[in-house]
Image (cartoon, rainbow over the protein chains, first blue to last red):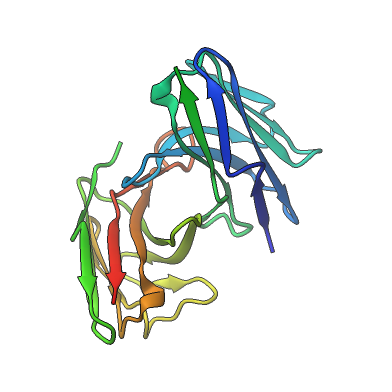
Length: 112
Length: 116
């Protein structure tokens, strides 16, 4: 079955630095990969989607890479701010393409 | 983007009782999804609800425990039946927007359920 791992449960960085979160997957070749942000007590909010034929995608201070050989996606937040503190989830489409499978998430804390 | 509301936002229930969670979307959508997020865990898909057909349940989830209704394109309910403390979790509904660049999902705020 598909397996998704996010590199660490928690990441602490200083304001202004670049945060890099990792998502690895096994036993599968997804057509696309997504990143979501979840704040405490709220549902996840979609951030970015990257397809298997795309190497990189950017949105403002966010950048996502997708390496289908390594079976890995990197999620970068540049010039991080305390407001970026949240849990970030990666998600893949399942093999049937009918639903999403989520990783456990990485909780990012940006200190000023 | 779709705006999704859920009722109730939270509840505390007794063992053996049932709770029905409502999910309302501000636009018509084909597919609605129900997830469970247990403390410290990621989201686990319970079932997919399409209007006009039976819900499709994921492995480990059964209709008798989690009956779902989908009476129209903007509304769905999930019932957690015969609850036990292990059902304490956040339950989220989501919809998929295929009209945008991909298959991103929009989530409701969740229903926090505590079973005593």
